[in-house]
Image (cartoon, rainbow, N blue to C red; front, side, top):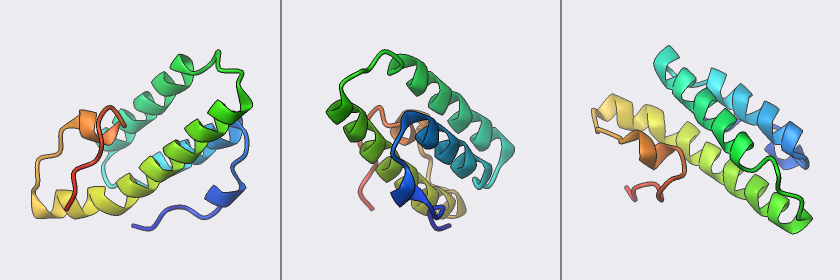
Length: 98
C-alpha cells in the first residue's frame, strides 16, 4: 500500500492532521483504522501547545515518515502473520527493521 499523494504539500499542523486521517482510512481493517485515528488525535493534543516553527516542521516530517512506514509495512506484516505491538506503530519506539 503506497503512501497517499500530497505528503510533500503538508506544511501546517492542520494539513498534517487531515493527511494522517486520510491515511488511516486506507488501512486494511476497521479496528486498525480506529487505533491510528485515536493515536493521531492523541498526538495532536500532546503537541497542541508547540509554537516553535522549526519543531513543528520536525514533527510534520517525522509524522509523514512514520505514516509512510505504516502504510508500506503494516499490510505486509499482517499478511505474514507477524505480531506487531501497537506501541511500535504509533511512534513510541522505532519501527522494527525487516
